Image (cartoon, rainbow, N blue to C red; front, side, top):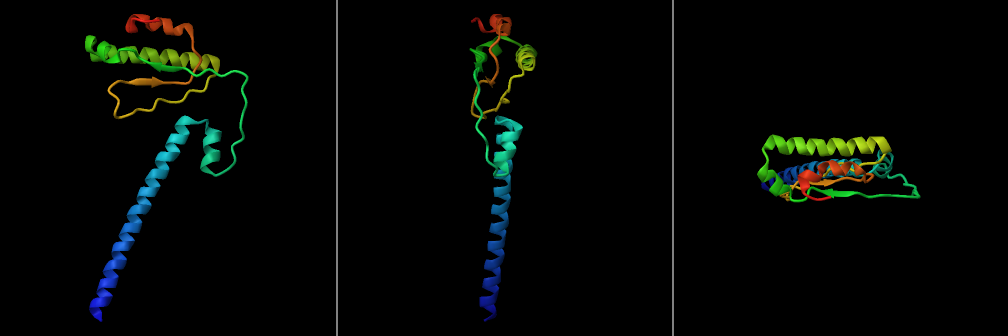
Length: 141
């Protein structure tokens, strides 16, 4: 009979460890989901979704979505020093941020995809003539 109780205790301990492990995994997944909501949506909308509150739809008379990619980024990097690449990206982000600030535009922060070989710049912002500054880097525009 002691053997049966020992087996039951071992099984109960094993199940407790599994529940604890799965609870930790669930908590990590919730943190990840919350982080994505915070990065992709305005704060009020993200908070409402996290707290299971209704999100009221909004209408806008005009919306512009700007998707940006540094064309031939790999080739550009091959011809530049690492510092030049960092300076170029810093200038690009700084210009985007100044336009965003000037026009009070909502920006979706950059999400990095570990599988991408290039750095892709995903922003929601007002398309500005400021992009002309970067024509020498991309050979386009």
